[in-house]
Image (cartoon, rainbow, N blue to C red; front, side):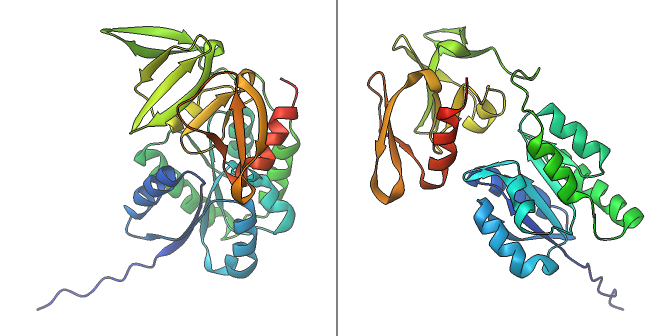
Amino acid sequence: MRSPLIYIKKMNVLVVEDERRTAELLTEFIEAKAEYLVVRVLDSVEATVNYLKKHQTQIDIIFLDIQLADGQSFRVFEQVEVTVPVIFCTAYDEFVMKALKNNGIDYILKPFKEQDIHQSLAKVQNLQQALGKTHPNIPQVAQQILTAPYPTDPPTLQRSFLVRYRDKMIPVEVTKIAFFHLDNDTVHVYGFDGEKQAIFKRLDEIEAVIDRQLFFRINRQMIVNRGAVKDIEPYFHRKMVVNLHFAIPDKAIVSRLKVTPFLEWLERPG
């Protein structure tokens, strides 16, 4: 006698993450649980707003990166009334983590692990059972976080990185680093002194522990120090080129979606 078929109702998940590899990893971790299906991956505030206006009723959970290419994802809540649970993704902002915990919306600390994702999904299930499917406080919480002062020196900021120098590992202070550059699957640290060393970390990991008032990730291959920027000029397709104070291996091109936040970052007090 055949065993009866077991039907598992899928929970539709929207992933909003502008780092392709991070989005792929997140999708893999989510869909490792048979009852979840990632129906769409988006990479900007604009795309998320447009999608939610048309398809929010088809979504059960949103994984939302806090810092997107075209600005903070909290801007989504200014344009759309979000009524589904949101799991925020963040690098280190301690205030955000506390706010989300106190208001029943979970967060993931980057770089995340599969266990983190599954724990967040379980927490959302518990919230849905206790509060019903919608969570009315999401827009208010997002607004509180958006208007809160950004901490200038979170305790998790890294002061130095270990780099490979010949047959040794030496620490390099972050203030002496002009930029990080990904080349042929290896990240290199370029110092203001012109020295170049390999660092065995991914750019995502580095971005999660550096001071974002001092550094900005202009594209998928490069994170630059504010002090290394000489000037900027227009480039093709509404992109921009950053000219640094010394020669670099490739053109430092600011991707189109990051141009506005990059210009705002440059004008922001250091």
